[in-house]
Every structure is written in structure tokens, then in C-alpha cells.
Amino acid sequence: MLTDELEYVIGVDTHAKTHTLVIVEARTQRTAQKLALDANRTGYRRALRLARRRAPGCRVWAIEGTGSYGAGLTRFLAERGEQVREIERPKRAPGRRGKSDAIDAERAARELLAGTAGSHPRSDAEAQALRALLVTRESAVRQCTASLNELRALLLTAPAELRERLQDLSEARLVGVCCKLRPGRDAERAAHSLALRTLARRVRALRLEAATLEDEIERRVRESSPQLLAQRGVGPISAACILTSWSYRGRLRSEAAFARLAGAAPIPASSGQTVRHRLDRGGDRRLNRALHTILLTRRRLDPDTRAYVTRRVVEGKSEREAVRCLKRYLARSLFRLLESPPLTP
Image 1 (tube, rainbow, N blue to C red):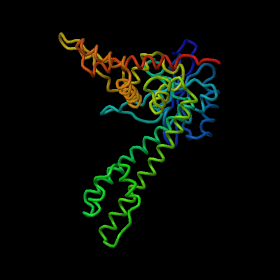
Image 2 (cartoon, helix red, strand yellow):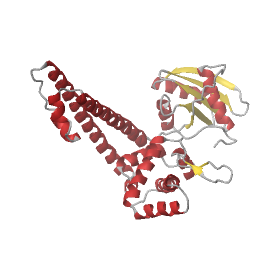
Image 3 (cartoon, rainbow, N blue to C red):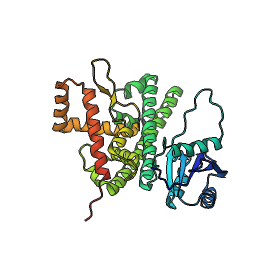
Image 4 (cartoon, rainbow, N blue to C red):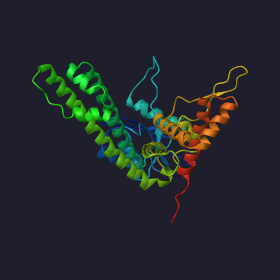
């Protein structure tokens, strides 16, 4: 990634309101400049002016948290043609001494110089837009499930008249009836009716919110990657999860890196005379869940997928191991599909 022509690395420790910048000379490893600046466009312009003045020539920005606190600075620099690499925040070891924003910024720069860290940030605007929609939809679905569970739990302690009337209804019918409950004269019944009606209307509003977001997600995915939706078992939500993790062509160096990111790469778990691999518990769990959802659909609808699982089980593998193999193959095929240049009409 780094070449002999590299002259400066600019490490940045990011926070919500301020960023700390440290310029390190590549050849001498000397710290040339330290600066604290505001996390806004004025501060970003100030940082870029300083970099052009004190770090002329070939330079790279090593930024912590490019997907959170450093997202604004990352986007600002990328739009102006600057080279940016993402550095993971360090794990704080017990008893570690020496902690400041300047120290963290310098550590980020030196890790990049040493070649032990640094990856392309997720800077694609469409991927960022999809990520915002996905996060908001997941929140709406999660809150909807919680509200529905609260409604059912409250129904267990409701007065007998309400409980017997509502407990055997289907989910859709229960929400519809609860939305129209009237208070009645009894104080206890009035309170339970109000609570049930409020929860039911909340469930209905959250479902409408989630559906609106899903429609927008599907529209954007169809515009940006129709070839992905054409794959068997790939729905709009799974496709959006894949696109946000992949981000843009060239960010990941290989399909093996994409599989590692997805938690689909095989992990050796051999012992003695047993040779086997296990599932990876790391990586991007949203991406891993998307691959798993696609495989569940294919196992239900695709005869070739069912035949593959059956063959691997006959060979001595468990169903979980067979699914792990399928996940790895799926990650490879999806990465090649996304990295292939778009067809010109």
C-alpha cells in the first residue's frame, strides 16, 4: 500500500467535537506538527491547509473512526483527492500508561507507516445512504417487536373480559382490534384499554415506517445494483447489507478479504487426528446475517443447494459445516459479481 515516494503520514484521532492531527515524516519518523481542530467544515479546511503547507508532496491520512466521528473529515478529504486510510481504535490494555489525543493520533500514523494497519474507508455516498436507511429500518423493526411483546404481556394481566376477547386473535387482528378499544366505565378496564390501544397504534405506525424505508431501500438497490437482486435468494434488505459492507469497487483487495469481513472464512479447528474448520464468529455480523438469509432461501427453493448439503453430509460433514462451506462459496460469487465492471448498453 505504501510506496517509497511517501513523504508524510497524517494521523488523526477523532471525537464528536474536536479532532487531533499529528504529521509524521515518513523517512525520518519525526513528528513535524501537532494540532487540535474543531470537527466541522471550518476545522477540516484548516487541517487541509496545514497539510498542504507542512506536508507537501505524497501524503496519506490515517484516520480513526472513518465510519463514525471521522466520517465528515473522511468525506471532505476524499472529495478533494486526498489519500485516506482507516485505522482501528486500539484496545485499551489494563495498566496501559500514557493516553492523550495527540498520542493516539501519532500511534495511528506510525501504525500505517509500519504497515500493520490501514484499510480503505467506506466513503461511497450511495453505500452511506443505504446504511442510514438500514439502521433506521432495523431500529423501527426492533421497536415494533418490543411493542408487540409488551402488548401481549399486558394482555395477560388485563381484566377477564378483555383477555378472553383478545387472547385467541391472530397478530394482525389483535393489533386492529386494540387500535379501536374504548375505555368503558370501569377504571381498571379503562386503563388497560388505553395502554393496549397506545401499544397497538405504536406497532402500526412502526410497521408503516419500516415499510416506507424498505421501499426506499429497494428503489436504491435496483438503481445501483440490479444484477445483485437478480441472484437467487437475494432480497432488497440482504442486497443493501452486502452493498454497504462492500461499499465500492477496489476497497477490498480480494474475495478472501471479503469473506473474512463477512465472517465466512474457514477457521482451523483441528485437534489430534481430527481435521476440521469452524465458523468464524467475527467480522461484519450484519453482512454475515445477510449471507445466512440468502442460504436459508436457497436451501428452501434451490435443488442444487439442497443436493450439495446432502452430499457433504454423506461425506461426513455436519449440516453446520456444509452451510459454512456454502457461505464461503456465496461470498466468493457475490464479490466477483460486485467487482466486475458494469455492462455498457
